[in-house]
Amino acid sequence: MKSTKYGVLVLGAVLAWSLPVMAAGGFDKLGQSGMTFLKVGPVARAAAMGDAYTGVSTGATGCFYNPAGLGFLTGRVDAVAGQVSWIADIKIASAAAGMPIELGGNRFAVVGISYVGMDYGQIYGTVINKGSANGAYSDIGNLEPSEFLLGLTLAKQFTDKFSLGLTGKYVNQGLPWYRFGNATYAVPPPDNLGAIPTVGDSLSEFAARNFVFDAGTLYRTGFGSTTVSMSIRNFSRKTTHVIDAFTTPMTFHIGVAGNAFDPLPMLGEMGHKLLIAADGIHPPDHPEKVALGGEYSFRDMVFIRGGYAFNNDARTWNTGFGVKYGYAGFVGAFDYAYADMGGSLGSVNYFTISFAMQ
Image 1 (cartoon, rainbow, N blue to C red):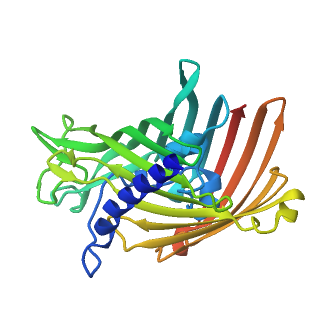
Image 2: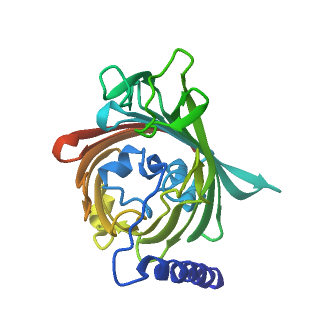
C-alpha cells in the first residue's frame, strides 16, 4: 500500500508541475523549433494507433515514446527495428534494444539504446545570385543533409505498478553551407551576394549538435489494465547553427490506456482484447492535439489497429496490422502502419520488426 501511495504521489507531483506549463496563458503561444525530425515516431504499432502510445509503450519502444515503459520489460532482452517511407521520398531508419541490469542477483533497472537516422537522399542545390549568368541563381551541386540521434535510456520499476525513466540523446544535424570566396553562408545564403561562384568556392556541411533528454512516468492504476502515463520529450538547451540559435521540439504527453474488455472476462478467456488509448499532446509549434487509438488482438497473435489525431494539420487517420509468434522463449513480431498525410503530401508507410527473449 505504501509503495502504491508513493507512486501516486510522484505521478501527481510530476503532472502538477507540467500542467501549468501546458495550460499557461489564455491563447495559443506558438513558437518555432529546429531538429523537427525528433517529433517523428518511428514505430509502426504506435503510428497505426495515431501515436496515442505514451501509456502503451513497454519494452524497447519506450526508448522512443516513454522511457518509463522500458522499466516494465519482462524478458531478458527486447529489440525493435524499422523503416519509415516518409514524405518526399525521405527514409527513416530506427532501432532500439533493452535489457535488465542486475545487482546482487536482483533486477536493479533496465537499460536501453536507440538510434534514429534520416535519409534525405540527394537534393539539387541552387542559391539566389543576381549576378549569375541567368540573373537569378547559381548551381552549387548536390546537397546531402543528414540527421541522426543516438540514445541511452535508464528506467526503473519501483513497484509492480510504477516506473520512471530517463533518456539522453546525442543529436547531430548536418546542414549544408556554401563558401563564396572568404565568406561562409548557410544554405541558402543571402540574395545580395552579387557575385558569381568561382572554381575556388566550395560546398560543405555544418553539423549542429546537442544533447536532448526525455523523461517519463508510467503508472498501472489497478483498475483492470488501465495505465496513466506522462512524458516530456526533447528537452534541451538551444542549438546553434552557424549564427542562429533554435530550440528543439520539446513536447508534453499525457496518456491513458486500457483494455475495453476488462469488464467482460469471458471475452478475455476466448483470446479477445481491445486496447484503447488516448494522448493529450502539447507541442511547441502547434496548438494542443488529442490522439486516439485502438488495437484489437486475438490470442496475442493477430492485431488490427486504427487511430485518429484531432487538431492535426496532416496525418489525421491511421491504420495498420501486426502478427506475433512465440516459441521456446523467443517471440518475434512484424507490424505495418499506413498514415494518410492529406493533400499533396500523400501517404506514409511504416514497417517494424521486433524480437524478444523471455
